Amino acid sequence: MRLFVPALLAALALAAMPGAALADRIVARVSISTQTMHVYRDGQLLYEWPVSTARAGRITPTGNWTAQWLSRNHRSSRYNNAPMPYSIFYSGHYAIHGTDQISRLGRPASAGCVRLHPDNARVLFAMTQEEGTANMRVVVVN
Image 1 (cartoon, rainbow, N blue to C red):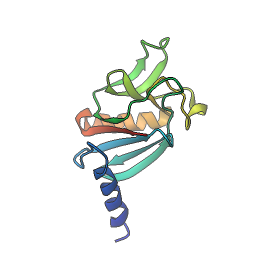
Image 2 (cartoon, helix red, strand yellow):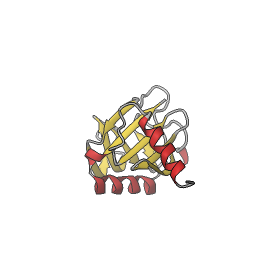
Image 3 (cartoon, one colour):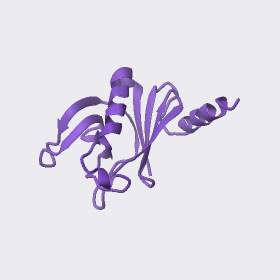
Image 4 (cartoon, rainbow, N blue to C red):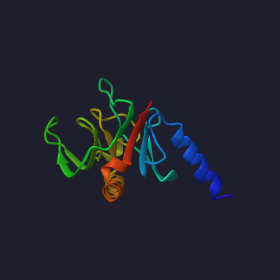
């Protein structure tokens, strides 16, 4: 019973997310208020990571999306060719990606994307590659 309860609670938490279906193999849930990402696979919480979302004057949109496309070594065409390793694009030019500004993780710092430690971005990127973008959901909440 002990192993069943956390899995059940995670499944219930996912079911409570607007637009998130339990059929989504991977769910990356980003909390702007806590600057954290929780990563679930098949309803089971696997990771909790610090992130950076939009700094003052910028916006990280809230909502839920299916991952659209991946770019392992992306460079920003909007922000001086800034490196965006392991990018998972989910809404237009918004993406989850690695950052070289690791010391800023855990507080708002981006132009709108969701920044991760590059090691964590690599893990999420590989999971998304393995399961396919159609099976990866990004949920961003306040």
